[in-house]
Amino acid sequence: METLRILLLALRGTRTNRLTTLLLVLLAGAPLASAQPMFNATSGSMIDPSDLGASYAVAGPGFSTSGVIDYSGFPLNPIDSPFTTGKLGELIFEGDTANPNLDKFSLAVHGVPWSYPMGTATDGEAIASFQTNSANLLLSGPGTYSSTFSFFGSLVGAPLSVVSANPTWGCAQIECTSISMQGGGTVTFDVVAAPGIPGSFEISKATFTFNAPEPSTASLLLIALAGLAVLGRGGKHGRAALTAACPNRSTSGR
Image (cartoon, helix red, strand yellow):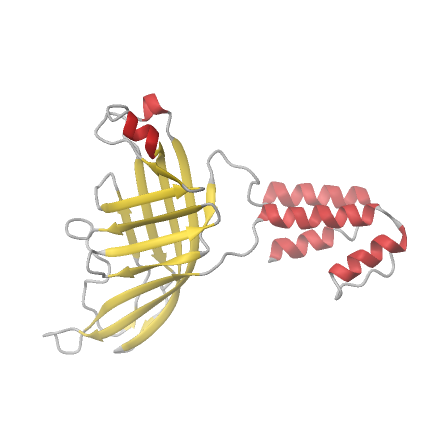
């Protein structure tokens, strides 16, 4: 919300200073447009372990994705090692179709299924990564513990209809698109005594639950531009409208 505070402060100066401040905020903050589509996850979950592995389903405006991170080979499941009491540390749960340890991957963008070419010299790829922010989480014994996590997912591919119609083509011929997904939320760890190892413990299950993200820089810019439009009308009517939108912010002295 620091970005929103700066944008609101920008509205208080002269017209020239307001525009200058807004430009500086945009240059210093996240870009409004990038070379690849970025989607924000607003709901979903991941459970490790499940009957299939680390199974997840994530969705947000314009997209939905799911898959299973398979730990039957390498890398090992981060929660499989017994431990004694102390700080948990950060854990990374990551699946990658190039390893391959990401199974049953699916992605729909605005209702259209997407996929990645495979078995060619220029394959596509899908990645799903969950990283816990639990470096200082102290585990003192059996029980349930909570922390936060960050999620990142990506696909280098094309609509499924294009990939299916050209099974021998790779990204060099299809001209694959890069799509990214991000989000985060709360993770809970179920800690139990490690069987057969006195004084040791293990995580029997990690459950990841997504939260809706804060407003993006782009949406905050729209708020700021709307405020500029109100102020641009001049006089007490513009100031009254801004006061109604931000009742706790005085407009006196301008």
